[in-house]
Image (cartoon, rainbow, N blue to C red; front, side, top):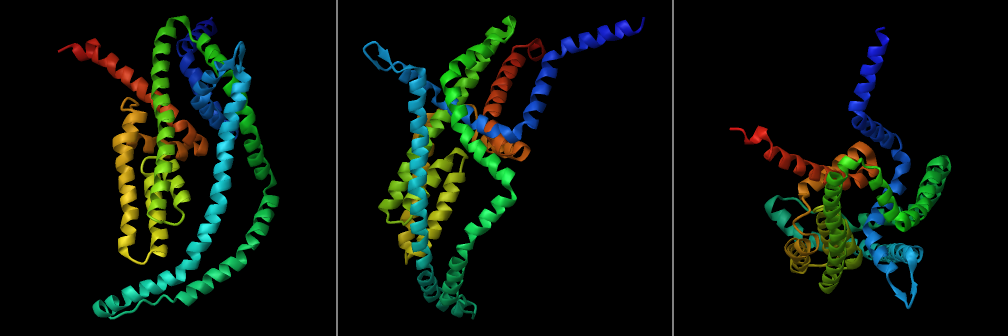
Length: 365
């Protein structure tokens, strides 16, 4: 007699909290599957960014012949991976060549530093600049001689961790396959998910989803445009002031601008190191600093307001915290999920605030 009411109470408790329970199960499942989710998350983000481009290409045709979704997806993927391959083919040889030149200049830069610092150190502190350029050259030579063994060590490590290597290679090969299907069927996926929303929630869900899409699209696509523009600016500007490694430093400073101030800080640090080894006077270093100062003004006052806009609702501090928190909790997959989740939370909090300000709790005096 007593078991029936208990079963009914448990059933009612599940029904009343079914969405919370399902959401909890979903989060736990995502957490357990994180090690294999990275290629899917990267593909989903790329599909979200480039879906509008595929939609536009589908409308292009000659006469009655249209490209179609499949061909448009293939063209977009060729553009994406072609650009990535081109960057790798440009950056790796350039970094290798320029690094050798910078290392070759290191002894002469130390000799110049000794010439400048020795008199001042002797006058002020009675000490001398004790670093010997010959010792530095010897250390560099020894390191270069042993650098050939790194490939052998890497191969041995790969052999000892075969499963990890296979997992990495599988993820890399899986990424274009997943991206192809997501890009081709993106609109169908969105429509099928929308059909699963309860009828009573569809209006509100559509409003919230539209706002989240606006936040993410303005941030991701706008930030991508800013990154590309800043990469071109830094590379051309550093080249114009005569800095070696202008292209790789410019690309690093621009492309890492996705994380606020990281690209700028890393670019300045690398540029100052190269400038200190390349130039012989402080006056030659100042134009390098002016380039980054001008870049910050261009990004913050022109490009970001014009290409990203002020409606994204994600403050730079929130972006930094979300990326760090996502990485700390869930690794690289957490970094990928950080911005979409924080954007959704920001939209939800905005609606919660609006509901509170119009509620009787707030309006009652």
